[in-house]
Image (cartoon, rainbow, N blue to C red; front, side):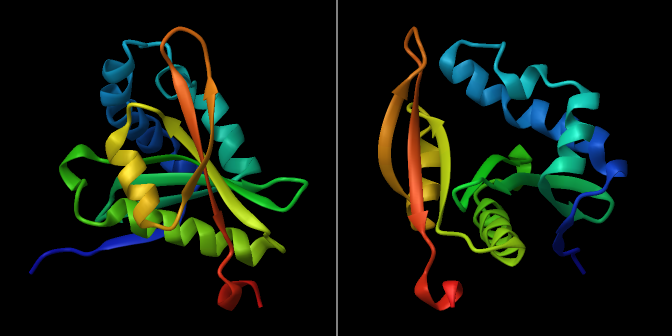
Length: 164
């Protein structure tokens, strides 16, 4: 009998596993852009612990192992900002990224009135772009970051059934 993946709120005890997963998961992004200095690969454990205290952080667990994570917050304008979605490479392409994204959207909606959701990804990250499009996000802009790197900004309105 196989184990099920459970999504829950991250605790401070998860910090080391989250950081290791983040480092593993963002290797492909760093390689894709030729930039090994991206923030997910240089973040410190102390910085991550601060985020755990200040933002919503969810984890996906397979037994005791953290195999996915996502972070979010609601900004001053009521926009749910979602980031650092990462799924362990061996667990990808099984719907876990979409489940984490939906769980974070629900979590942010529970916090306060949300007018919509916003996230971003690199312009070459085609798998990420496909996932976000399947989840109802639409491209609203591109921000050049210098060199050959640009971020694609994606947004999603709050479905009326959820906003009520």
